[in-house]
Length: 188
Ligand SMILES: [Zn+2]
Ligand SMILES: [Zn+2]
Image (cartoon, rainbow, N blue to C red):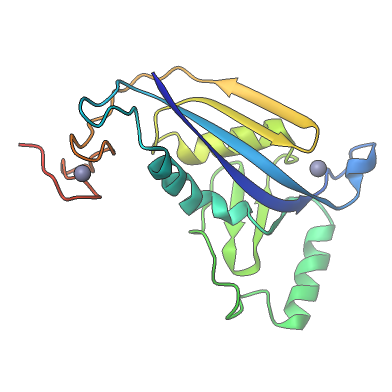
């Protein structure tokens, strides 16, 4: 069965080199739907608690929230960093506290101190699904991702191979030592 959760991300981006309105900087509320597939944990009676899926995803994906997403070759990138430098906000600000953990994958690099994500490809809805899968595939048994942004929407299904070792009390995945990160239960 599947547990399904959604989260919202508000971001600005543009498609550098694209012929259309999206060549201009603009913003969206993007909606990401994550479908996680596994056996239903007996007694807990869930595949995976949705608030826990959200927590795992949000820890990383908040890098995209209230953020600017630009392709690595976009000339806006040095221009904007220059302005942030002049303002003294490029390397962080006391009020920029809702930050995610910095990440670097072959598809994207997050700079939480200036709420910027630099991508290899344009961040279309399809591009975002590739980035998100790369970031979350080792943390959750993802069966499907759907991302919508304005009137655009894309989805991708994945084959789920591994079955999770989950806590019989909380239903969340055990860490590599067989311990529940939430309640401390240990597998014997
Ligand atoms: Zn857009
Ligand atoms: Zn537990």
